Length: 94
Image (tube, rainbow, N blue to C red; front, side, top):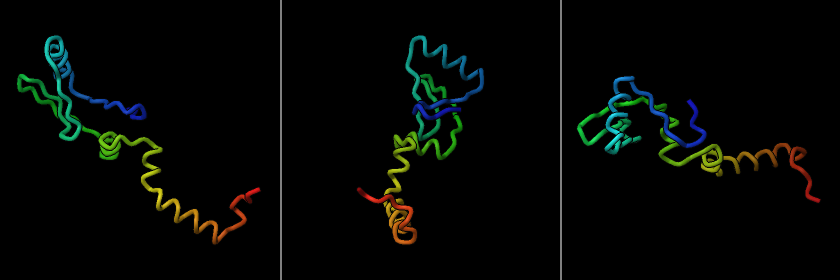
């Protein structure tokens, strides 16, 4: 499954999909990522699985850049150590 577009992909058994498609003709369907369920007002409740890391990213609105920025302090520490330990790797400023 692809998650890069920030859209949750839910995999359910065909019987659940058929029921949800029927309900969706006239009523709303609720997808709850935190509880990992799809429900209807008619007490239908279908659980789905999702990778915990992907769930974390979707709930936090994180993409690769957001994840990287979340560790900005660690990156800064690493870059400082590279500058001290291997100064030849740091480009000279003109």
